[in-house]
Length: 346
Image (cartoon, rainbow, N blue to C red; front, top):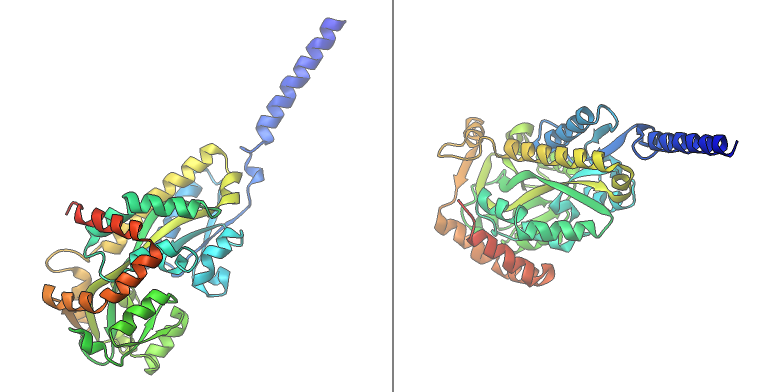
């Protein structure tokens, strides 16, 4: 009889263990039916394409255990894109493909990508995002209840306006330029003699069309997708003054709710989607005759490409801003960025 009781207990224990394994963390029933991904712009912008790719890859690779849906237009934070990171920390947002610019009010170190004229080319961006600077940035984000997984890209930001070609700092004198909600952008355009006006992109479009503001700064993919020549923007200056890397990230509690196996899947999907986003953002931007630039010219827009000496004039004009923000961001991090760029492979 004791032997039978022991056998019964053994079978019961085995059954409990099997049941626990079946309904434990690996059970998709524990997952939410939908995980919300926040972005500022949708497809066909590279930003939105990267987010959609991430969601599609995760759904496919988890056999539908994890379903992610993209919510563009910063709608999860009532259109205020600068509140996205805080909302993700608090769990209002599950995931995001977020802009380093929009997250910089909460993480001052992210302003390094908005340091005027720090990154002259794509190799320089890569030297930061995939080098010691990128690693440090991810460490800082990870300390704030958000898990950063991969980099994507919105692109270099170029300046456009409805008044005149811009070849020298004096050409910006008095121009009302829409900028994103970052004090650094205010400082840059003020140093160049412009009148910077912070507003969301939703407000910027009608402001441009009515002439309430004269110009704006954004990647060329924004210009072509929205046909900004129809908003009066018939002057473009290619100056690569700042770039806008994007970060694919997950709320810490959401991340912890996934099994280790699914964490690996979500992370790898983020890397793959991020690489795709970078590819799309740079497509038609490089070479002797970039297709995107030609497309803009074909719209009847005047495109100015600065000579090295012309670009240097803008560098010199914004150097006081650069020096002031180097102290705010952290001299060691900026020094590392400068070193990584100097050593980059072109």
